[in-house]
Image (cartoon, rainbow, N blue to C red; front, side):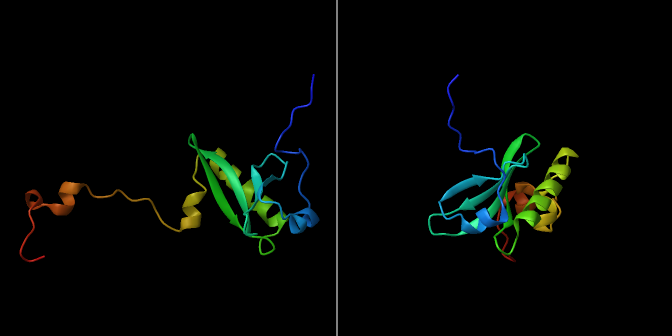
Length: 119
């Protein structure tokens, strides 16, 4: 069996490696939480959590180092995973909004879609 190259090195990130990482790309934490340190070509760095919610894959931003430490990013990723496993959507609390039923086209325009002189 030959060695397969993988983007993930299987090793968990350390606080020192997070601060030192400058190469653009996604750097996997290796702990099974779907946590990545994303480094942009312009040097911007932020935590991303890849998660599947009700069959749809998403990436959730968790903040930027050093404001959000590795330990805090792992805590947030764990919390998000628990919410998703329970059938919830970890994005809802972040957005601070409730999902509401939107009115349909006919409810909005009313009167057969004609504009009124009052409006």
